[in-house]
Amino acid sequence: MDILLKYFPELTEAQVQKFQQLGDLYKEWNSKINVISRKDIDLLYERHVLHSLGIAKVQSFNAGSKVLDVGTGGGFPGVPLAILFPESEFYLVDVIAKKIKVVNEVAQALELTNVKAEQRRAGTFDSRFDFIVSRAVTNMPDFVKWVRNNVAKKSSHKLTNGILYLKGGDLAEELASFPKAIEYNLTDYFKEDFFETKKVVHLPLKYKP
Image (cartoon, rainbow, N blue to C red; front, side, top):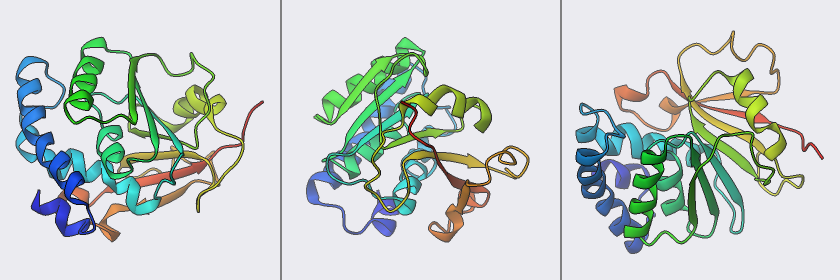
């Protein structure tokens, strides 16, 4: 928890309590259904929770905004973001049912009423969202194909509606066909070695009627 308070000192008492619960909840569920690698479970707050919240350093979500988390796995980045932004709505999808079971159990235990999680494949529904978030589930060209019809028309944030993607390494080739994509280095916000090559990519997407 110390690492979260280091970078998010403005957390409310209720948020601190929920983030504290996360560690035990994920350790318990990970022993039953493996959603986080065994080596990472002891580094949950740095490599999963704080990493997820890197998106919040780039863009805060307004009250009433809607966010889609594609390929959420065990609930990242969606669950930490839902704790941080309790007045925003989060829809978490993954194709693997057992992972969605963990997400729903964690969300229920934390009383996250702003989280809805379902076993769904991206590109199979028409709901609209201010932002689509994810942690490197595929390359950007394929990801854009999956979600380009899920972007809401009206933008109400500092950044234009579209994708906020957590990814690492050299993305020049992958983003070559997306000149409007902007990379934000997480080392500008977090000083731990883990974030040395980690980035948030913002890719604005136009509403498709």
